[in-house]
Image 1 (tube, rainbow, N blue to C red):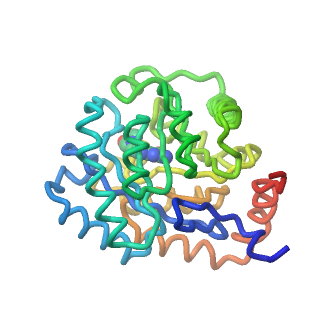
Image 2: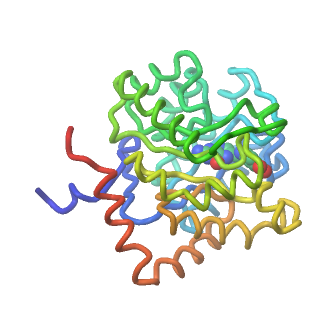
Image 3: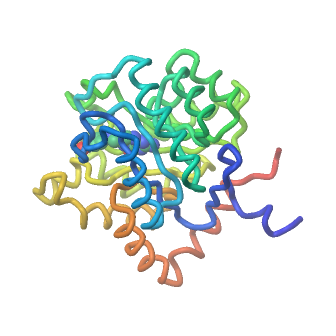
Length: 299
Ligand code: PT1
């Protein structure tokens, strides 16, 4: 066996995403009411220049989303969502070499996005929308399964858990099982605890503190903490002043075993991760064992 076979790697529609070290997913929102970009992207050109900045800053993958899933958001129509993301994905794939991820829950959007060149499905509803499991199985690209309690419109009303970590882990284990039954091999699956999706700040920090427990799912872990309200709760700062808090949160997640961090501020996150990586202990001891668990060669 060659050493390259032992390095965890996702095949994203012909583009490789190696997970031998923590990777950075840069956020590209194409919603008119973008979470912290204020809907600046009226045109594909504007999207491309933002993507260029993400790539220049060192993004390893670009996540394109046409549905805002921040608390209180309402879903657009399928047609609206497709018309936002498809032209952007086509342009990104023509222009850049990095893999492009599609942040969607709808099977129609998944199919159109992968046809346009997207190489990873990022689904905050973990393929629970009717038809999504089949679409993901057909499309043969990696899928990130995220935990959410409720729906974005109302998920922050009264989140409740007896034990947030074990409930999130059980949900993700059940979704992994459903995916495997539907014919999506384990090697193509990632998990995400869904910070801010139907969780109080206290529950979010409980999850972050115990993130390493999700390594028992034997899948790469993706996390999104960037600029979220849980960081506002502890700093007292609005979204546009959460940069330092976001970098610290990304590093804490990396230290607890996250493989991919989904962020707005790529350059600053890279610096944070570089400092973390310089610790001799950081990337060797615990991560090796998690990688050994994560990639059983049973296929
Ligand atoms: C995420 C994520 C995502 N987050 C994945 N995809 C968003 N895989 C969109 C707040 O509390 O964490 N993982 N796609 C953005 N959603 C939110 C949720 C934004 C909560 C802000 C908050 O402020």
